[in-house]
Length: 129
Image (cartoon, rainbow, N blue to C red; front, side, top):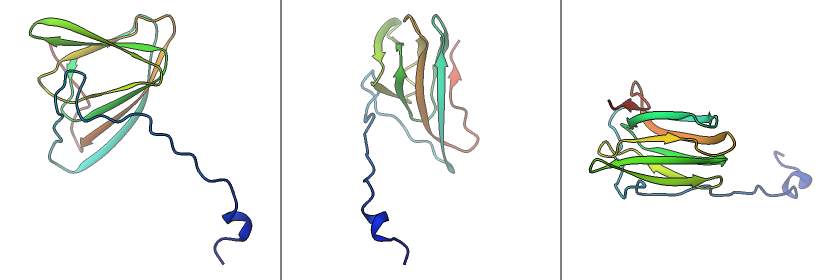
């Protein structure tokens, strides 16, 4: 027998959806790249004042902020549009027409789980000069 009565009576798992989106902060739909699929998950910590420079993502990226807060700054028609993302919230990126940068303007480190729905050999981000 694979499961005993005690194993079947054990507590059930708790499932919590952390984030769901079908559009970027700018309202654009992401594009899935062609190739051999490869999922990637990172935990990224941005110290206070740290900045990830202006870039785009060639594949969909989901970010869930675990601790602190992030400023996601998109360039729209030459102007900066800022969204503040607090702990417990998330956002979706992955449209080449939406360059952005991320900065921690808060008072504590910002910790995020970042998942890339990419393909083998594709970079996670491409810097925009």
